[in-house]
Length: 296
Length: 336
Image (cartoon, rainbow over all chains, first blue to last red):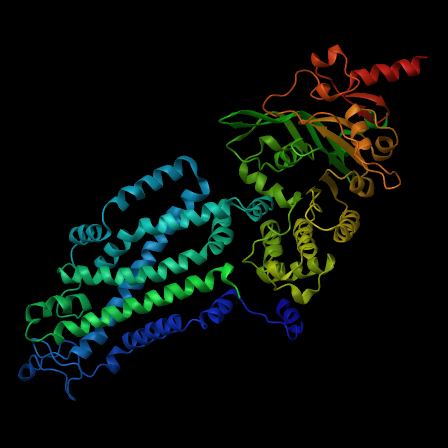
């Protein structure tokens, strides 16, 4: 019945009524590089989702009479040492890379975000304990940490996500803590407490939504580094296991033939590069779009 | 006499000997020291004092929102509807906040969440204290907006789409959404310009009567107090120095500090080069003067003022003053 009431209210005429998301998209459209990044990422996502339909061959199908072939009408990007179609493998590889990128960042964001929010909101000893642990993790180079975790957990897609995710946790904890600290002191938080909100509610409904801007930017850029990290892990054999194609693993496999057949490494390398570049462009564009000071 | 005979049950709020300190690395700040204050049902009390007199700390103390650390309530009781708020658990206090005591903050620009639409912010209050569905709470939020004079179709707007005065109206709508018994308004109009001030005050006055709420209005503007309040308490350095009916206090203030305050109010008809001031500065709250905290600035101070801490005494019916010198003067006048 209440809905009926709402619907009866006429929309205000003429005034722009945009939610925060629409506002950001509107501003993002003004940056061609960011739009390029967004389009590339969406395209990759499309390829990854519909890989079964779009890839010309199954990724593990070996054409033994077509080994090491260069690009041709039959194999658009050539074939590898087992005569497998590189294009098909790249398309399936996008699946892994995007999955690892987004899920690893999701893990890092969830764990790091919670730790950072709690540390920033409560402060004092809790803050000290959490952040010192994060400092210890930060003192280990991220790649090394990921290698250590991956080695401990064993190879495989899921373990790789966890390894890459955990190694990125401290970054997110720091960023979230920073923005929580700056928002915690604002008057509307005190106002929220004065209406009887619990701490958890204040963190989830008032603080986190207000600290989204830097988190979104960092996450977008973080997906790029997660993909790179995952490729690195696969390159040294701790990630995805053959025959499933992963861009880093493809680089690693083609490495021995790089002098005679550079296209084995060239295309996966290019794929990684374009993806990272696109994510970085998008991240930079989002940073500008989300910065209220740059409002035009 | 009326004050003394007042039934205990008529009292909504009874603060006894409240002492609040901020313990910092540089020393202990005595924000509120032994404050006594009573408020009856339906009354509005103006809490007047300079910056740093402890007005806001008192308000936060009532709400149980003293930032801790460094703030500590070292002694005292705050009886609200007969129950001591200081002994309540955090969970119980959450029901009191908003549900029974609501607060209006000073700056409407910063006291609304910038990324939440205003109806959601009003609905949050309703959802926390009433057993209603999400959709119902939003409808009620719209009703509250209309009550404070904002058109219903603006309920889905964000705070930045409102002007300062309208934001303060939203804040008032939030505060009154759950029909609180006591409304604490902490300088509700300081951040607004004068014409909007008048509108907001008028609105508060009307809604206070409509909701039958008691109100504590914190301000340093004696004009606002004269407009809305029934009772006035003058605070100085963490203590109430004079408490009286509005009319009594405005027609014949008794405490030297209050007299000084009234003398400092510029008069439109009078042509003066300089404003009248009370000599000296507010004392350092980390190092309060002994005895009466006002004695170093007081023109009537005698030797004893530096030694004895003055107690509140009822010099006239319902007119309490913490100044023995004035008490003696008045007693002498009456005994004559």
